[in-house]
Length: 117
Image 1 (cartoon, helix red, strand yellow):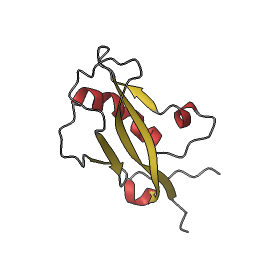
Image 2 (cartoon, rainbow, N blue to C red; image 1 turned 180 degrees about the vertical axis):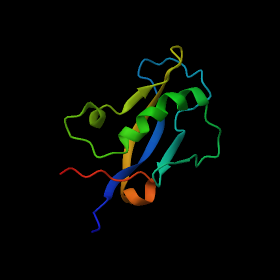
Image 3 (tube, rainbow, N blue to C red; image 1 turned 135 degrees about the vertical axis):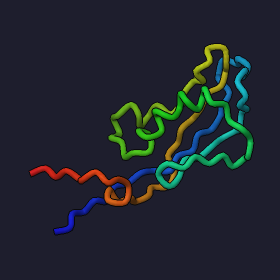
């Protein structure tokens, strides 16, 4: 018997914004820079410009949650702006959902799918 193992994730776009308080950006990202997350886990930097690792390290834990279907009341659904982890930097990153894609559990992992009784 075959189980339906389909689930959905959204592509993401992470844009670099300038903070509202006017502090300068001291990390090596600029307003207008962005990257996307597509096809489940691929980071794409379309500008070809390098992206600093410390802001990226702060953003990575949020991306898996942001890609998922969220309850409208969940704070992850409404809080889209993330401050740069450098307290002296005025950079802000906006994470937005894009295309919704279908995936299959059986194509993503070798772990068995647990079924409730």
